Image (cartoon, rainbow, N blue to C red; front, side, top):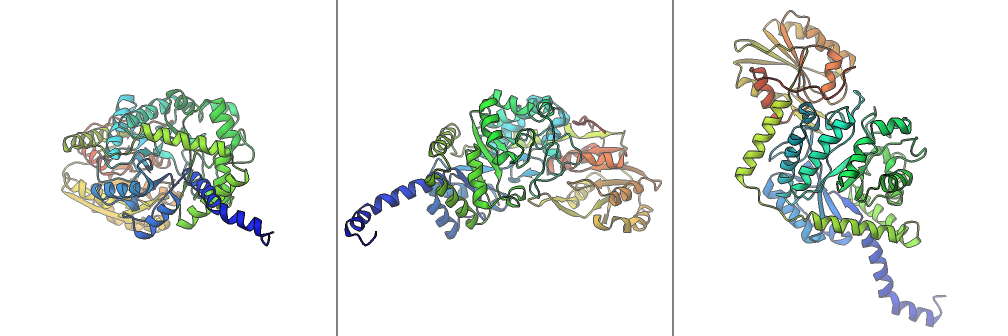
Length: 527
């Protein structure tokens, strides 16, 4: 047919039109994508990549952050390429999951659960919002309204406000309203609920086998309240809920995202996927197929993380689906419009963050951290004259999908500002059973043992046995559940629970060990 001179002439004449149509469908596709970038500056290759594909926004991680001035420049550079309407997003939940550490650091949601006051939760959310919008970040993937009812949950834990759905809803939505009032869009997650899983969706595909009635009583309650409160965005979970959809995880489920969340619950805001690079998705679905399926299911924006080749593969798949009719252009344009309207409500222009306000917010975080420290079984405090032995797994300890690091050494140094004699005993948690004799020997030189459990996941039986052994050595001792509060269930020894390890929390813990009252209450039921 191309040999027909009339056809060839017509094709060549209309080639610019065909190219324009193709680019229009590409940019419609990429407006429904948020990507990550590799470093703290917009290098030439990354700039060219963003210019070529014009994604809807960029999600920042710790790898992108050095200091406030650098972040503001990076954000400005991104928007200079993608346009002023581009979203700049981040995970700034508080506690372990926060990327900006150079300004006021919020305690974990479960720390707020230990306080139980909605006004305090709202104040913390507002302070987080002031921090982020001062940098030009206008979308926060927080808070989590997952109701953490499974003590062995490896990924939520302290990221939840607790195990009572009504309390979780009350505190989380106060936090979200505070955040949005400060100019940053909130995202309630992970729909329909990640609180009763024993698998981490970063690593595998969890399944929640509950009846619809059970889901309504617990997991779904905070999301119904989210819809009523008109919070702006909800993030999907990479979890299968057979009661709602026997085949697909929520992120890829039209039954869950469109029929249930949109139509039955009446949600009118933005639906964003959790990161599509997580193994719950990548181990079961090809990269491009997952991107298309999530948009077909009802998502407005996909979180496309990984190397540029991943972004391109997903953009190409979405473009092709738009062109061949597998993905409704009308649906895509509605999603695009939702994102545009939300960007008008939450413009990304950096707001002034005065030194006075920064100091107030820092003071707030320290006060909240102090109020959250929770006593369990009447823990003993050290005396000023005691020789304190701090027992822990490693002087630094990494855990979590993004390598959150607990610096136990920092805690030791803070202890030394109040107690004259502090030493450390460090063991390897993978070989805990081999350290029993060494621990006994070290304890002979101590008057008081601080038994610090530092991991995010559950303690192994061997590690729990070693830590319990510390309490049998004839010394005054107290357990510190640093990060994972459910460790108290493994030891059942007198403890202080902190719900985290960031600087304000460590300072608060030292104050409590020095005599300050511990006023927090466990925000979950003991089993």
